[in-house]
Length: 114
Length: 114
Image 1 (tube, each protein chain N blue to C red):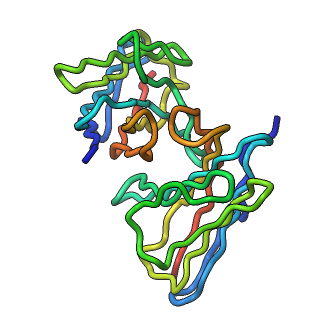
Image 2 (cartoon, each protein chain N blue to C red; image 1 turned 120 degrees about the horizontal axis):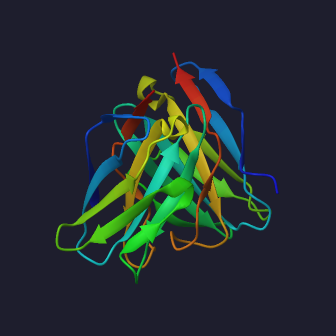
Image 3 (tube, rainbow over the protein chains, first blue to last red; image 1 turned 90 degrees about the vertical axis):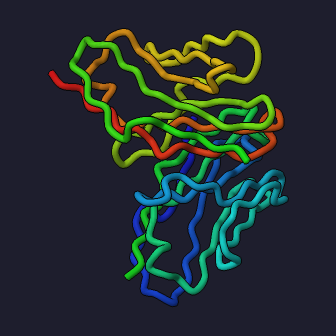
């Protein structure tokens, strides 16, 4: 069974630009969660989607947004990029909503903002 | 609010020695507790989790952890370290029967010396 796929794996953007990251969950998984990982702040939760509905949202500014499609694939968008948005963005999928279900993580998208 | 403290950002052990990674949590309700491992340039992998029931939890790769409510701890142990155990380890907590997002500790980097 294929794992969680994230595209692109690496990305370099300039301050002020916007970026869209993609996550394809494991087949049959209906929940997708996004996390930001930085050396300073560690791993922080961004969003959780289940059946196309945002179920939980972390404490991030409105520049960070996401969505989930009917095939469970998810995208997250960051507008007006800042240097501090440089991070590894991890996506995780699970069969159901919440942490009762094991989350399977993708390899991440490394975003560098210059 | 829930939080996780991992004591020691870096732990170094000799091959064959006991591995002990410390995790203390703060939660106002019965928590779900998790340990994840991250190898370089990869996503996170679940090692083990505690939800309810037996307080000693066994996970993959010979790791185990014990939930101690009185000490608000969930330390990770492995009797004999292997070189392949070198990685970053994250403790995480979730509340309300898994309906709140994962809150991670800052992580502990484990080095194994031959």
